[in-house]
Image (cartoon, rainbow, N blue to C red):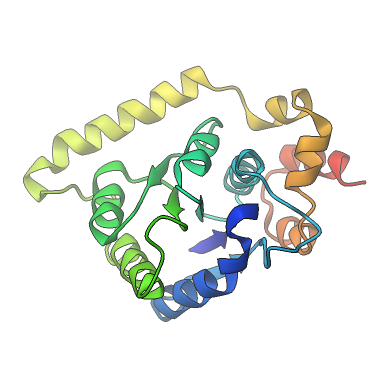
Length: 212
């Protein structure tokens, strides 16, 4: 699995801490981490939580990554922005129990963490516990296990609802404020990482039109 890490501007300074915790947990599992930044609070590319949603949706819908780890101060803005787009099911995760139940019950492909809320002593350990429980088992098995059948049924229903209520991302991006979209794609390594992993030619072309 290819996992993207995305930080918005209020929490850019924590990127290295988050990346270290994520790599420590998931690389021994065989997963790959791709850090899209922000890398520091002073990066030239300043991502808002709305741009985090644009970037996360682009990465997931294009197949450039399989999962997105993101967040903001409270995690709420990043979660709402991610869920504003097709192809993204983002959960708000504060602790290991949230991570485990979201993975097993909701079987999403992104999480938003409140990186400022209660992030003090032991914050790095809490991140490790979150990532351990998020990826410790095959997702979507249900919790508790006797609830697996209705939970899997509900997840399929949600997937079909999202297909009916959202348009393809390649139709949405050109209708957004172009500066907003360009900003989402302005990270230091965005082009390098995205074009190497993109599996959707339509989205590749749309993204290319914004970064010429």
